[in-house]
Image 1 (cartoon, rainbow, N blue to C red):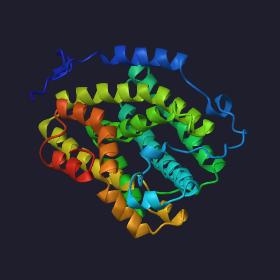
Image 2 (cartoon, rainbow, N blue to C red; image 1 turned 180 degrees about the vertical axis):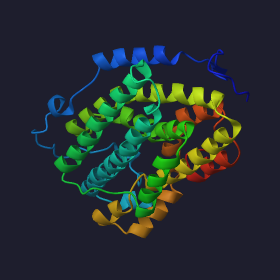
Image 3 (cartoon, helix red, strand yellow; image 1 turned 180 degrees about the horizontal axis):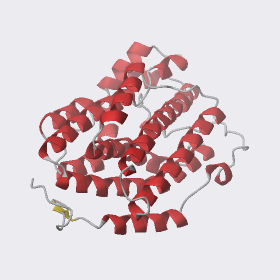
Image 4 (cartoon, rainbow, N blue to C red; image 1 turned 30 degrees about the horizontal axis):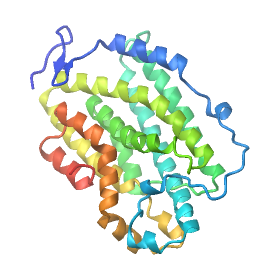
Length: 309
C-alpha cells in the first residue's frame, strides 16, 4: 500500500475518500435532525412488562444449547435480563474509552473545523448513551457487570498509547457488532418496550458514529506509515479477542442459578452462538478486509476471537 500526502487525492480499495470537512458537515446536519434526549424520549416510569424479554432469545449466549433446553421460560427471561445488563455494562466501559480516544484525536486539530465539531458532538452522544445504559440497568433491577480487572487495566494502556488508526479500528469493533444486535432488538415486540426504545435511540445515533469512524480509518490506512498500519492490524486483532471474551460476564450464569463452568463450556461449543457472533461481525470484517486491516497476525487473532471464520 502506498502512502500519500494530504494534498493528493486519497483512494483505497473502496474508491475515492470524501473530504473530511464534507463528511463532518453532513454528519452534523444529521445530528441536528436526529438526536435524542433519553431522559425525555423514554417512559422511565412505566412498569416493566410481565413475560417480556430483555434481549431477543436467539441472541442470548445459551440459546439452543442443552442447558437452554433444560431451563424454564422464566429462567430464560431472567437470563435475558442479566445478559442485557452485562452488555450495557460493557457498552458503558467501551464508550468511556471511546470518548477519551476521540478527545486525543482532536487535541491537535483546528478547533473550528467541522471534523472537530462532529467529534465533540459524538462525545456528547456517548455521554447520553452511557447514562441511558446505566439508567436502564437500574430500572431492570440488574447488577452491573464490570469487565475483568486485567482488561480494565489494559484499557488504561490502550487509551495512552493507541495510534489514530488503532483507535478508530477499536471504535468500529465496539460499535458495529452491538449495532447489528440492536437492529434486531428494537423492532421485536417480544422485548420490553423500554429496551426497544433504548436500542432504537442507540442505533439511530450510532449510525453516524460508524460513518465517522469508517471514513477516518480508511484515511488513516492510506496515509499512515507501514509500521503504524501493521500495529493497527495486531492491536485490532487483540481488541477483537478481548471484546469477544468480555461480551457476556460469566457471573451472569451464576446469578440465574446455573452452573458457571458448564454454561461457559456450552457457549464455547455452541454452533449457534458462533454463527450469531460471526454474523454480527461480518459487515465489519468485510470492511476491514477490504481496507487491509485483516492481514497476517491480526487476521489470526480475529479468527481466534471467534468473530471471523
